[in-house]
Image 1: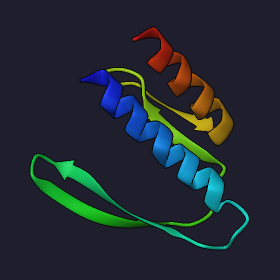
Image 2: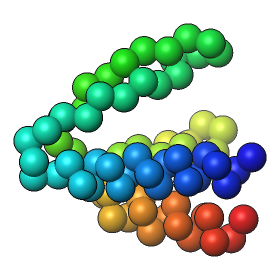
Image 3: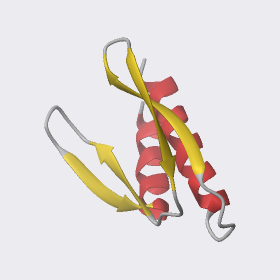
Image 4: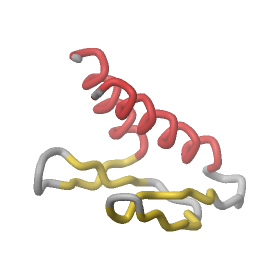
Length: 76
């Protein structure tokens, strides 16, 4: 179950990197709670926040996030 989640995160980070410098926002649907979703408009960004554990979230640059996610994918 971890591999699809990590791959999905890598895709999102890659999309954010591709949109950087274009002035184009990204529209994303995200889960707020079980079976409840909302929509967000993400303007150009240089960082993302990743859940590392049950109560730990850290902010990473897009490049750092890609490296961390790829390392996690390689270790699964």
